[in-house]
Image (cartoon, rainbow, N blue to C red; front, side, top):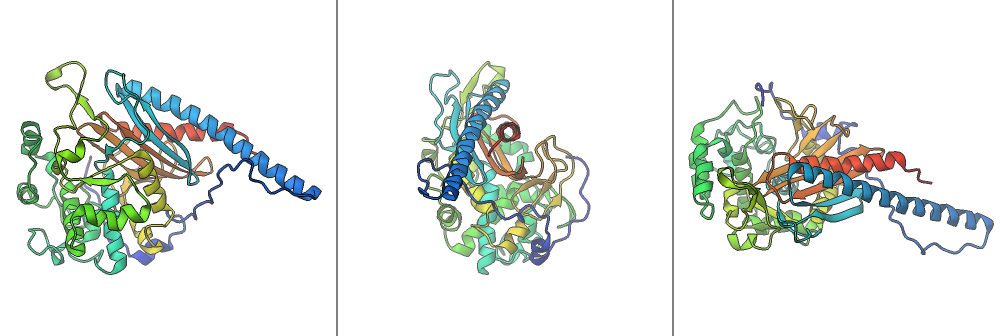
Length: 421
């Protein structure tokens, strides 16, 4: 990803809150769903005028929604076809209001089964945002110190005492990652049903050593989020599934989101596809044999509407208070470049960019065996707040991000052309 980042210093919660241009800063716009047929009858001419204006706005909203949905379907379908992907579940909110939830394409590579809009997918690294929210809710309770040593909570884990939870959450702690280990990829290929234990993940990864002094660079680390998971479990006294249900899923109103812990939990997921091995033509379903334990920080599964609901609850301030949400949205520099995030930065469990092809954006992508996913929030897209979620049933680099950007871009195009009253 390029050269090492410059020194990264922790920024206090109060300072983060004070930034007027912060992505979390704009107050959420009120939801204005179309409610045809429910206007009060007014006898005065002024009342009739108010009623007419309301009806005009609602007609324009419905007309705009129809154009948005048409454009999203076209943009997403074209992106799926270009990627050779069977399908994707899409959920899109405008100003917090659901505009589209739809399965586009197919569940299977043969194209015989339509993909459902409420199908469940492995989220992969979108789970980092979920874990960050859980940890930050513990910070708000006083059960975790954001700038405290990780060793103070996990004393038996061999990590530098200088590494803090903030640094785990924004990847500035200097921890290595198992994603670069040959033996990890060899083990997944050889025994997909038998994952390493937590101790084995740490024993194989941590001896690689710190990549830089804590707070003095940036390097993506799944092991860092494994430690976040262990800290959440330690502080709550609960296994991750129960802890996330208490801290995130129920408060956000997520009815179809869970943590997969066994192969049995993966059997009702939307089938996930990957390129056939050995250069063979076509795609194969891989999720039936890939054990969730290979995702060391925890494999969250969900639907596109649930993920959109979670992200909207987060940015609207319904899961975290303003001080901690401000800290979550405080970016650190990420070395290198990305075609969709310019320049790339990272908050606490959030990918961020001040500029992108569609303006300011926060969220996260995820990919792994069978799936490519993304959940993105655009705070000012054609003057509206847009949440775009794409869950694709093919493993392909950045496909989820491409789909989420395509769907959001279709919204910008439709809103730019529509003429609401």
